[in-house]
Image 1 (tube, rainbow, N blue to C red):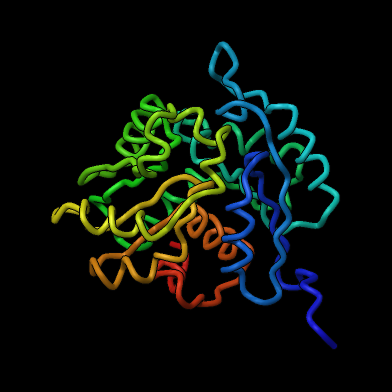
Image 2 (cartoon, rainbow, N blue to C red):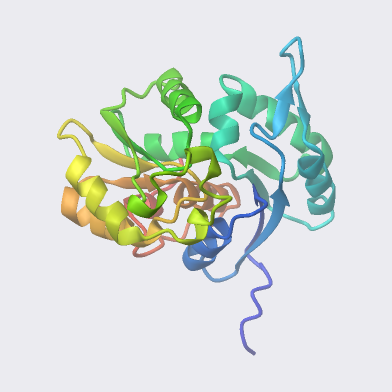
Length: 264
């Protein structure tokens, strides 16, 4: 019989930005046989769960809560809130608060995580202490600042950071408007590769590419060869962690040293 991608080994749900195609494409490229990926889209502003006034909990955005109710009936092994911006803008404690609210809908049997926690676990797994942070061009100054603070709060001493320059065509467009103008679907990986190779500081022990909508997994292997450092990306980290949380320990070829690692 032919493969029908039924998800016999693991069935993973992920929440992604409503207008993005990159997360699904990258996960489908990397996922091992027997693992199916199911996405739900969220159109809310970041973070996708707003802190309550007393900061003792969060309220899920309508799209996120509705998606959790739908996912709850799908016998999923893991669910990830796949949005770097939500984790970094939510700040300290937000990931745990969002997971608590999601788990109340999804049920205790489902492993629930966020892209922020996945990237932290991935960086620890490959022994990163001083990563070089690369962010997409649509991250505003406020989001970049939040990301720097988020990873510093989790014990990483960043060796530097870089916001990718998408080229002359886009330089007149403010970061927050790039997706609306179509930049998300005009991403080119060759210039990204060259900019990272040129900018990576000697002190960096890892390259960390943030942003689940940032097209980049095709250059992981080439970057690791050129820089002799491990590379962690947002979608790679979340797929890796969801697989491990689902009990799937396959080594995945061609997508970096991380995908050879077991979760700590």
